Image (cartoon, rainbow, N blue to C red):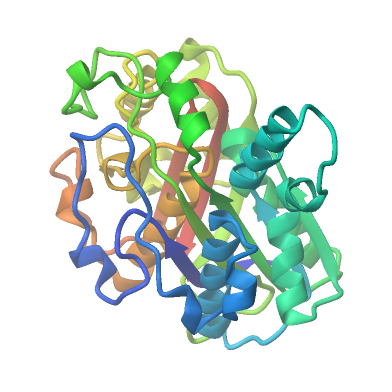
Length: 353
């Protein structure tokens, strides 16, 4: 199989990730229940008449994908693949509210049409006039990883050479209320969160959109080589280390070959135990965490992939992400491990391009 390269990376998140010096300007947040994305001035990218009809996730994705394509020097990709956990939930809520308010009568179809999960990939394609392969994955916290897998297969099969791959999720008022009721989101009395040693249930919720151009050829601008991905829906806690070691062995790697491990510590005491199990394997690696910077959400792994790409390109590890004191002068291989509430575990290995 030929190598696959990540040739550009763009992200809209609760950090100011569209600007330069990203790794130097990261600031943690552990004392609020919900953190919102820092949004750009959409009028610079989208006609005002269209902005009014777009939900937040479509707007974020349109701008993030614009930056990703520009960074890669590509006008029109050979395929567009997007992963999302919740889709266009703002429009879903508006549609359901209309159903209730109008007693299921005289409904306009607009909000329903715009509420489907594949709206994001469709709107990007419309904006680019791209008629190529267009697909959306909805696999909770492993949606981006499935999108990357699809992109790799497209490139291996010779179906495409440059593919736009993205992940996106937005917040909505009603969903956040429900998440607070079922303790998905931390209770106020449990703030601020100690991300690495939390013994309480729940997380701080975030949002964002991350887009990448995955290509067959390495370019001058390449961020990373996408080595391999593994996904499992359920994992027994005692099998965590075997899950990781088997994956590394499959790629002719050992724990000593991994220079940095990015773990998805979310502050949820019940599910973070998986990451603590994983840490024991990597005593010689830089151990990093990131959800104190991004918040937890279905496709938070997009933020960690974006940060990992920048670490590999700039060869800098932000102090604010470090769990231990191990620092490598040359970062060649990064392992990303993520799950959401103990389900949908994913492993990704990125190598310096």
